[in-house]
Every structure is written in C-alpha cells, then in structure tokens.
Image (cartoon, rainbow, N blue to C red):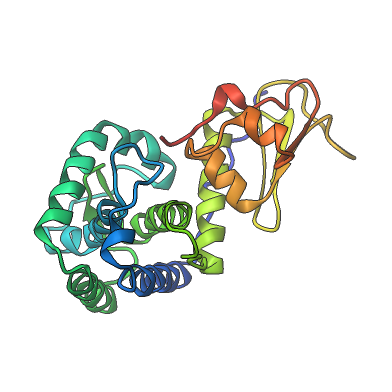
Amino acid sequence: MPPARKRPRAYDPAKTRKAVLAQFATVRQGVTALGPEQLALPTRLGEWTVRDLAAHLTMAVESVSRALDRPEPAKAEIGPLDYGAATAPFADAIAEGSHALAEAHPDLGALYAETERRLTERLAATPHDRIVDTRAGAMSLADHLVTRTVELVVHSDDLNAAVPGLDLPFDRHALATCVRLLADTLAARAPGGSTEVRIPPYAVVQCVEGPRHTRGTPPNVVETDPLTWVRLATGRLEWATALDEAKVSASGERADLSALLPLLS
C-alpha cells in the first residue's frame, strides 16, 4: 500500500500578514536610502539593475492589492505549492513589467509609500479566506501572502548581494515561511522517504524515492542553513559550489539533490 499523502502545511494567516508587511517595510527603508549610483548597480539577475529589482518588489506586493480590486473567483484553483510552476510561464512579462515600472517611477520612495498604504488598508479590510484572482490562478488570500514571503525574502537577499553594506535584515517569520514553502515544494516534486532534508531551525522534509527509514538516523541526509537553502532552491547558488564551500552537507547515495534544483529560477 502506498504511503498516505501528507496534508499540506498550515500557515498562520495573521502571522503571514504581519511578516509580509514587516519585510516590505524593511526593504522600503533600505531602498529609499540608496543613491543614484547604488540604484544603477547590476544584480545577479542578468540585466536587472538594483532600481529594476526594487521596482519589481513593489509590483510583487501590489499584486495583492490588485487581486483584491478584482471580483472574487468562485473557488481556489491553486495553492502555495503550485506557485513556482504556475508563475514560470510569466517570467518574461514580469521582467518587462518591472523594467517599465522602474522607468515610470523615478521616485521610488513615493512608489513604496503608496504600495505600502494600499496593502495595509486592503489587508485590514479583508478576511483571510477571501479568494483572489492572481496571475497564476485563483487562490486564497492567505495562500497568496505565503508566496509573497518568497518574493520578499529572495529579492531582499538579491539586493544585499548587489549593494555592498546594505544588509537588509530578514523578518524571522517571513524567512521561516519562505524556507518551509521551498522545502515542501521539493518534497512534493520528489516524493519519497529515503532522504531527509534539514534546514534548521525552520524545516525538515523527507523526499526522493527509495527505502524509507523508520527509526534512528536516516541513511541519506542533507543539511544546510536557511539562506543557503533559499539560494539553492531559487538558482542563486549551484549545488556543487555549495558542497565545495561547505555550505551544505550531504551524506548517502541519495543525498545528491543537484538534479532536482533549482525549484524556482
């Protein structure tokens, strides 16, 4: 008999809302203090500048307000684990929109202030279970906000990598939610129980087909820190490089995750 399917992880919607608002406020404070030379710096996202990336983050968060402006769909079609696959086809459109937004709004401070105002007001007036029409498909507001933690954490890290000394901090719950969603995405795409992936202190998942361990230390173990995991899962860091730099430990014949990564790119 095949193993029973695991229930999707539950996220506290009130804590997720607070985390999204907190991380966006952190980014706003950091970005609006940057000068023209810093905003013109390149990022690790190809042709994107820091200004483009900063504008993109307002677009990612404004997607919540825009979705709440539209009529409510009859039912949810997707959940957080569908996020990566569902948004991948729109990568080019997202990039074009981000570049255009950056050009149209030279005053990033004003753009961030308006985005934050709208988001705060709309969330205060909307229940967690409201269904929203997103680019990827209909989903609950609570689930859509879970995916916004991924956008905010991943791109906060991108900004830190691009701007020396920026050092944007990470809201603990936003980082935890991002790590857990990416870990669960791995487990969903490579179901099984032969390999245990540990990202302390936030997540432990089992994945990859093969013999399932029942007690003691599993035969195949991968362990890394939260930000290294985020970078591996989103293509910011290669598996081989992480191993060479001792940023990840992997033991066992089924502990090589290189064929499964990145989950988002």
